[in-house]
Length: 311
Image (cartoon, rainbow, N blue to C red; front, side):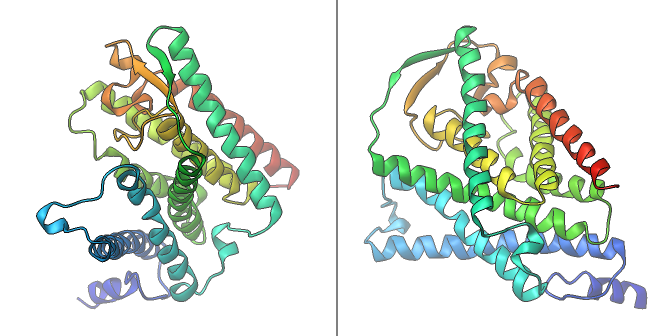
């Protein structure tokens, strides 16, 4: 009985306690869930209050319309990021550097470069699908510079915060007591869970393809953090990927549609294995070899770096 009581005490997510490796992993997973749920409650409450302040009666269904409705969920990630950082500083007594955030020009430059890489990667895949006849280009949508900037900032917040939580906090915190492989595994699981909420309407084969792609892209982000000892590249790729897919092309992002794209793309084929169906290209079989190839490149670079460092 005493062992059970001690175990429960040691896994308390709001207590920085000395514990075994198993207790430590459970504690950090609970901390991740705690941060996520508390952040969701606080941000939903703030959004409701904001709506009332601006005269929207959400109880009777009077909701804002237009771009603001699409932008609010993305900007809401800011609260998740703030609470994660506060947890690291106040509860864990750690610094931003401990979760691979380095506020300097090098971090910003790497972020920008990798944002372009993320955009380019999606653009190449979409172009291939258009040239193959699976997608069709139908024209352009006019967007004001304010809307473009607003969406870029929104996707920058959303993508970066996911990396701060999954790779910055969870992966790097776990690595203090467990192996890199274990840390990557649990950070990938926690990264994947929110992305599978739209799986219910999908055929089984597409679910498995989407899961494989989620694993591969999560590995890419984890490898990027390990290679650079920084969140800069992972955040950049993630932001570029989401911004290109969700705003530039206006396609479904993990089964959800956030905006009408600058470039209008229609799905011409009913071959869901290629197009990804309603989930989008993240459930496309085309993505598997692309992500696997990039993962291998990053892994090789990590191994070369390890040799140079004498590891």
